[in-house]
Structure formats: structure tokens, C-alpha cells
Length: 187
Image (cartoon, rainbow, N blue to C red):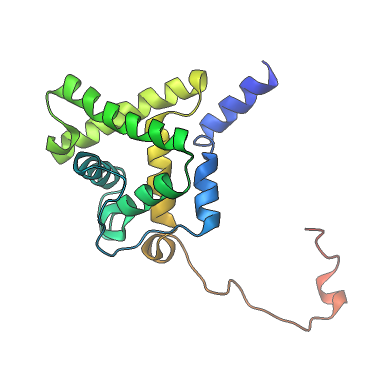
């Protein structure tokens, strides 16, 4: 097995590689906001699809879901402010193609499906994307899912109610005799 193939398989096992613009956006300070979202880049159909699909990926349970914490607005902001023009156009085209494929496959647009049908269709597209990513690079559905998860887990709700959060992890003891701790860590 070649090194490149080994890396691809490892990445797939670990959940895929984080798409570079996502890292850039988070480092830039993009975080979701639960305030009312008014689409700037997405048309009304795309905005509805982004809302429905992100809500399918992380639905509300005993904690608020992706829609409630503002992930659809986060996704639009990332695509509009962080993506290059080529990446932005590709994302918008893939968003429209996702809905078109759903219409051809199910007879309905994604937003018109029941919650269970949306889940089943998204589950199917996720499997197809994982299989295709090994051969052809990043797939739209996995990029969308990544944006949804990064947006959710960088929100206040995701970071404090879903993930474990401590403002200052552990106890700080500033004056500890060296002989009590032994050798120090290099990193």
C-alpha cells in the first residue's frame, strides 16, 4: 500500500480530513449566533435546505439542535466570508445539486420530506460521500456535515452543554517543590 493511500484510509477511519477553509474560518473567529438569521448569500430555497439539512444532522434533543444555536447562519457566513470565489460557487452548485438529486430520487425536495425521510436520505448521502471521498477527494455532504459540526461545537451550547467544559481545567498549584513532581514534560 502506498503512503498516500494509507493516509486516505486513516483519514476516512478518523472521520475524514477537516476542509482547510473550515479551520481558517474558526481561526478567523466565525462562530454561530442564535440571533435571527437573514440570508445574504443563499437564496430562499438554499437557506431552507441549509436549515433543514443542518437540523437533520444535529437535531434538537434534550439540548438545542444545530438550527437553534444558529448553525445555518454560521454555514452561510463561512461560505460567504472564508471560501474563495471558486469554493463558494462550488458549494452553491452542490447545494442546488443535492436538492435536485433528492427531488429525482424521492419525488420531493429535501425540505418537503418528513423528518424520518430526511434522516434516511441524509444517511444514504453520507454513505455515498464516504465511499466517493476515498477515490475523489472532499465530497459536498461531508463538507456540509463538517461545517454543521464545527458550527455546533464552537457555539456556546455545543461547547458548554454538550461537550465537557471547565473555564480553567484542573487545579493550579504554582509553588510545588521540584522533587515532588520529578521530571518535567518536554511538551
